[in-house]
Image 1 (cartoon, rainbow, N blue to C red):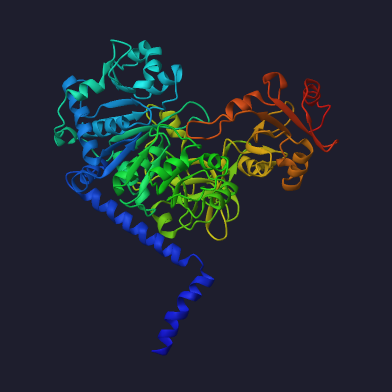
Image 2: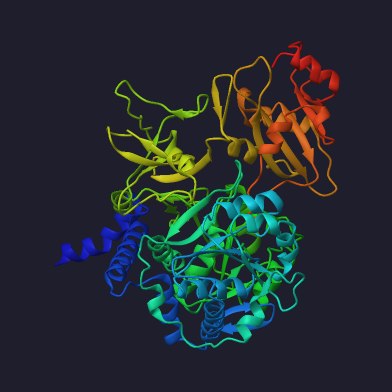
Length: 618
């Protein structure tokens, strides 16, 4: 008995000392099993249980609870149900839709976005979520991905953008265009607001979605387009059902208030913010656009407990002027991805103890990770159970030839712990890869065959990751962003992190540019300076020489007043790469790392020509 008592006392202590993440891992695996069992249980329900049905459950159990708060307007779950019924019934009266059709949503963040999606789900229709920032040819190209769609619904503020390409949209088959406004600029468009006001809020017959299956498309979400034109990733009803668990698995409950500032047309806003709240019954504080200056004031005003981030959002918050009230808020959890280690530390130091749940996922991908242990810099942790359900591995990648390394048998080569490799995940029934709408060529490019054995098929994430000896997973770079110089691979994120440590640098975007007569690409950095600060040539030279190997040091630096980013705050590199280091291609100040003078010097047309003629050695 005494021995048993000692074991009960000492056992947990021993586990904590020798296996520091044992209890954290145990809780995670318990949650993972619970989520899996709930998902399987829902999949077995008849009639089919879809994400929409979870919303209808919330309407029944908490009809008067606030679901959406937007610009001082409050909508309960029941309000959202009624509004979506009116829109659905208006579309039925107009006789422009049949179950199974796809509708293009070209809308900004507003309650009508959510009401429209709910209405279309009730009608058994899928939605293509267009980026509200696109215009002209890009708008037409995205609409073309939804071949067969005949209806487009646009926000009142986007009437002008639709008018510009109205004839082209007609040619693409979008013959009916609704605007969420009472006053219309064109008689060829229809007012969805007026039609909904004149319609009944009676429940929509469930028979309209009787033919919807788990493999049916639910939404089409466009990739960010950082490497070219956006592609429409197909999100099936199964994927949508699984997405319900994202917030709940991170401890979010119906008592939480979630601040959604990210675009609803994007994966983070739609799947995490909107779908996650449907599952938990939480209240959404919806904002048209992210504002760093108003962020914390609104969090305090609405008693926000959960925030979302992506890309550079938290860095923007850290760059705002400090206030005495910085730590006076109710936020306890931040969920998102793309957070740099230095910003992570600064965010916690300045805004207090907020649990950060950094995760890794992609819109079209079939595997994801979550950093449930809170290790700064990591995107996840290796889990036996998770890997069993969603088999993945990291393989050697040749950045120069832009392809995986293969052995004599023609199979890919796995990398050991501590080394960077390309993340690939096996395509299975549990972890499918559906691909892109109307783009079989791009879909096939993401399928990697004969990976670990002949005949297998894996999803090529296009991302380089690393697993350390403690089994934490770290994002390193995109394969298109990593470049090779002097026979060495250069990870742009690592170089960017080093440059960002300089006290006069607000943001750095690192990329590789080609130099005629040289193999590979040489490092270049676009830099945005802190307000009122100047670029310090000597200090920058000493800094990069101290912290970076010779091959990774950016030989060229471009000073920018603003940094181009996508609508979801991902840095754009394509135009920067095309401009290269040619002074005639930009009015921005350019600098060259001069080893002879041991400083950065102004990159003049004369020096540019000397580099091209090889008079200056690189």
